[in-house]
Image 1 (tube, helix red, strand yellow):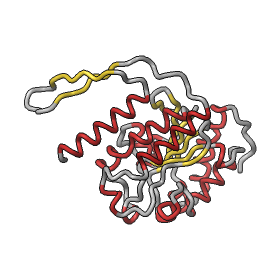
Image 2 (spheres, rainbow, N blue to C red; image 1 turned 60 degrees about the vertical axis):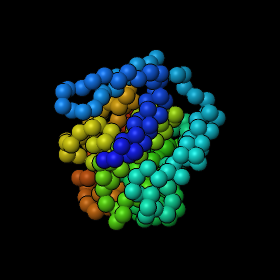
Image 3 (cartoon, one colour; image 1 turned 180 degrees about the vertical axis):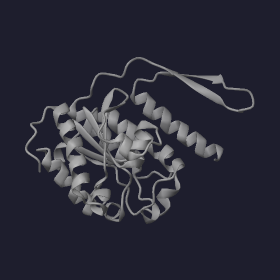
Length: 246
């Protein structure tokens, strides 16, 4: 990895940590032979929640000034449009997927293909509209051939996602599929061992569940029941009434 790439990633990391209240960074030597320094961060608790207007303005500014012109990783070379994310700036539930697909790349919106249609039905089964939640991805540009984002692409792009989460401050995060869950929880566990259980991300409750694209490939009663079970736990957490099985 080049020095320039490292500096770009450090800059994005600092921006994301600043959103959580960072006000200083102290560099300290690491183990001999490593040839680098580690950062110890310090700062007050995160600022008071933003008003709805402030959230909308900050999200729009990040999209307009940083994400759309972003060329920090190779994914910018083949994209047609960046896919920032969309939804309610005051959303209680924030859905996170892997990355844009072909339809999303063309339209600049998350989850608008067949998987998006299924996600819309999942949201509706919770008694919500798509406009009442927030939907994003761990990377903002489509990986060529819909491949899984590479580790360096994830490291470069996810500080944008971190800042979105801090601005919106959802009550619950729902990760869709293994790549998004693995990033948010920093684990390599199999999806089957993570979904259906509550986890914690920086004080926000996180529920992993299967990606809609996986359900389309394996639309079994067992998998549908598993997702519905996960969604019911989310509904109970945010105070939504739980209807009969959809």
